[in-house]
Length: 401
Image (tube, rainbow, N blue to C red; front, top):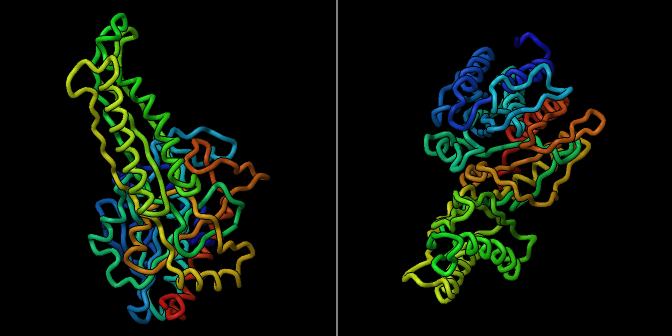
């Protein structure tokens, strides 16, 4: 299929990957297709992080070396049929490329095809990273790094198709651009019993309700709401309509742009729970020693994503010469990305590329069961990648200051 014109080939690839989505660390067919495609281009590749792929396009010298990263996993979402996706709707029931990773793979392969054809003229090399498990913390980036995926890399570039901004718009900013992600789980233990005798019960549902009501107001009192988001995703407890359960589980998450805010929220959650335990022990229902109690576990997921200032400035200068809609001062977003781990190791940038197109009915946001892309975005994205790569290899000192 590499005999197809570049844009047709990229669209064909995207649709092939879209039809066979796979969940995090289960991307075996995806991995095989990527390696076969690279082989057809004359690029040797190898497996990394179990289901990922890594390869290098060798130019005239090993350095400078820039890495292009694509995530490759899909989501546990049942894709809805639409007038747009009939030719490529997911064939794996309950699994869908609902976040654009199929497009990311196709764009990086598109850039690889162009760069491989001109490899004899490249003054450096290009590392290709097809990373598994971006969607599932702790993610695949850390494994790629641990297994040597960044060895010899001087800079790195990542890009994400984004359903909330207009087709072709490129959005980024220097410094903090995406939030950290943190998951908290709480088990509240009370004393179960019959509803006819509430005095003999310590109601964990009531305590959980008080916690949910209190924590939002308490964190909002301490921190500017623009600096964080916090939400409850699941409450689980009880089985009988007329019985107070012994335990209730709460699962939630919060995101921030600053590690100090993360510590503040975690500390506030703990203090709020301590206060509630004390209140309910002193109340009329506090008739059992050491009850109620709680167990709190906080999982720190992806760190804050920080674009390198010099790298970002150079990218801005390059893209504004060629592309009509470049926003180099985009607002930070509360999305989280394990690309942040790469940026902790080498200078680089993460970009958003818009695919919203009202005229074509491309209106759904990422993670929707009706999410789709305007396939015109694929050629735009491919051109963005190769533009930055070529400029980086030509004048690396501007990116690595």
